[in-house]
Length: 150
Image (tube, rainbow, N blue to C red; front, side, top):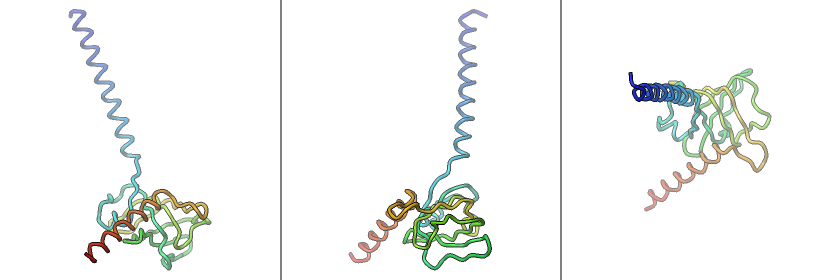
């Protein structure tokens, strides 16, 4: 084999190794990415089932039901709502009508089973996911009102 062919074979082998490495890294990132969804998106079936994701919004007033360490509540973006079930101790700042982000999986029954629940930190703070969800829902509500009026 000529030296030129040897260099070309080595270059092709190195490119193949780098390509396999990049593919493995991208696959690892894809399996660990957690997307955030609003209750409206979940109601529209845009969220994948049985995959880790986040849902953000406000805890609907009157929806919190405690049964030992299992808590069921509803997260809303003021347009749609999604039922959430969580087993564990909730943060001290978890309250009805306040911002919340839950991380977990959406089941086939439409109930979001949370593994972690994050609540707002102070009076002026709402988690970015929850703030975005409420803002988007308010835009949709205004658009629907304008369409109905005109």
